[in-house]
Image (cartoon, rainbow, N blue to C red; front, side, top):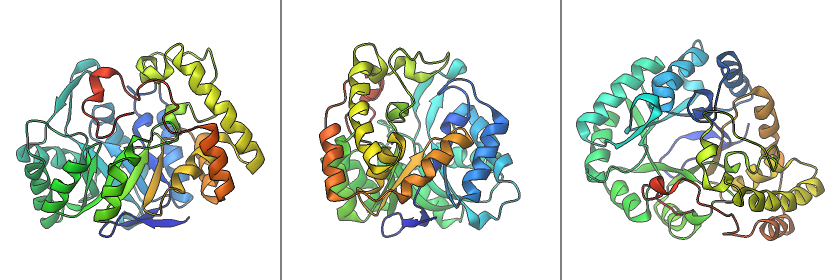
Length: 332
């Protein structure tokens, strides 16, 4: 497994990370616990060390699942990236953010117990709390770093100005944000800021929540509970346009002898040495397809062909429903 370092102060991690959100219900429909655990095991056995979760994924279910999957593995053989602060209600309703220092310590205490570990490798607020200065939130995490409960501090879905303010309090290891061929707003202000400050980027949504997987097709209906049923990019009229882009991308993938998914992952990885794609594989089959993406080398001609197939800004529909767009660090 190739390694990459997250920024100038962050950890050395596998060049591909595993996003665990989809392994718990409430995101992409029904899940299979045994298969999810087997997938985590397969990822670790393949050399994946970075595992990303959130304390609100499945209302704590995801952390408990990972605790079971990681049991018996040496603690220094993997890194846990944990998001916190998103408030939830019954039936998975969303109730805003909580970045208060007292809440930071509370959320972390619960995560450490659920995960069964004595520290978190990267701890990050899931979104910006508009009522709490980012300096206060990061300052509270810094206290946890000093106490040994957190190794590195990360951010998620914040703008360039917030990145600078947070980094002034404590070095930021990485920003987690959506980045794919369909979501490139990060390239305008955020990526230059990260490069200037020596901050890494962990990219989620690299397959456009399945649009770029090569497995979604016109007329495909999301399963009950699948959040893609509310996604503008999967709405009628938009999804057909977006899948047409994927058809053009498939021609490039065929020429490279790889799948569309592998090409999409390889493109993200090729955007910079400090970028680590997170793959939300829920099954060993999808993981096995994703892993060879690291062996796909893209030439300048390949990159030009990919840009022609999926030009910047060509996706139709926002990446989240309108009610959530204001909380994101970069637009579409």
